[in-house]
Length: 483
Ligand SMILES: Cc1ncc(COP(=O)(O)O)c(C=O)c1O
Image (tube, rainbow, N blue to C red; front, side, top):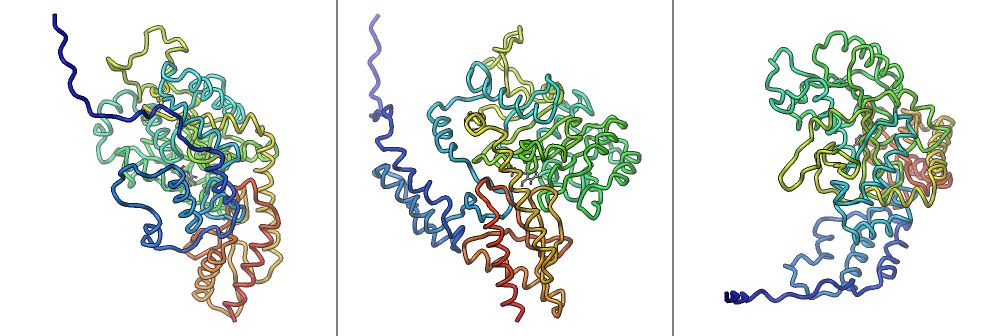
């Protein structure tokens, strides 16, 4: 038989060689920039676009040139969550071991969807999940998975709660079986993160079917109102409690909520996306009492565990509902019937199939720094927040609106002779001016409908001198503006 002639193929370059660049040298300037002021510099999209080459890429540029381009652009228009004076939102500071660990993830490029696809990745992910489960005293049979963030993790946890509540019918028929009068509901507090509303929207539950329970003076879910809601509602999918709300860092009364959920046999989902990192500290751990009774818990590694983006743990007390919901099998991806550990499939308990080796940076940082040591940094953050609260209480020109329960607090500049509208204006202006000066950053926020200054401390490098510096700036600017 004659061999068919080879078709003429497109010419190609050999891309198998390691990139021709010293990675250490390439990163040195970026690493050095991390703690430098300003945290942010105002820009328009036109300013930034001028520094980025938007022309169609022809592949003529050297890696050195591209490194210089990005280093220069981020130097001119930075947004440094890494800076110890960054007190905005809940942004990851990153750890010094992260650049190395993330480079390793990229070089290995394993897809941690199944044990077979990534034996080391699967083993390491299961290991770090066990450490976190142990911190919370979750049972040995509990299982978890690392997702891209708290939003995805909250949605997946709630989806599993739906399966537990409504059985396999939920997977097959969705919520079509329910009449208007018996629509399933999610119960959370008014202070719950908006990812819960988005989960309700995406899962077809509908945001109208969220019962938002009032909060008390400390912004925590009112348990008496939760009790009432649980008595009235027939079709509760789950109760979502927060262990560290986004705005004030409030921890809902987890023990009492767990007690009520147990009484009514309702799935308890705890959103500790922000607060979870505090569990690393033995001193802070008692504040989370009751979390060990949850059915599912979410903790973002890229918030208060100090990790660079991204990674969020979704932990299940019993993953069988998740498995019922997410299980799929295909001719190209089928587990052997023996269900041995070597057949483990992470994708059976999560909506994601292809997944990067998210656990590696966490594994490396935990092994090299230790949970206790990082826990001391989290405790230090809380102590800085408490120190700031003390300073605010002593200052007649300042009002503490939300005292820290963890490492977030809200306050306001007040001047006796000014009306509320002027005070609101001044506080917004203080925030803007602090940001413009470049050494500190607070994100815009409102508490009970009025502008407030919110400080969120989740950076391992923040020290009391940064707190003193922030407060001095707020007072200086507030006094100048209220003249
Ligand atoms: C309490 C809480 N839950 C969930 C989220 C969403 O997390 P992510 O941004 O990782 O999706 C946030 C984000 O700030 C949060 O504060």
